[in-house]
Length: 122
Image (tube, rainbow, N blue to C red):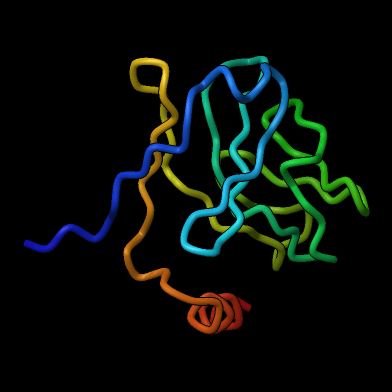
């Protein structure tokens, strides 16, 4: 059976301050990784579908991130927005021996493919 995910080491856990997010570029895709004060790690695409805001720069709390441009909220675990059609892709992320590790789907290869998938979800 073929492995559909690539394990990626993003860096040290300490580079993301508690209660904040940080953007990482993986295969030309901007991914926001969050470290909420409530614990855990969460990862999602860094682009708000509403107006393209950088989610890594948003305020996090109550297991949600607030887009810094227009205040749209997204669930950290599910990527679901305030409105039914709003969602961002999430990724499995965890801490391992002080390192941030992430599963990256192999099929996400270029921007055209991501745009087609987004349109299919609408």
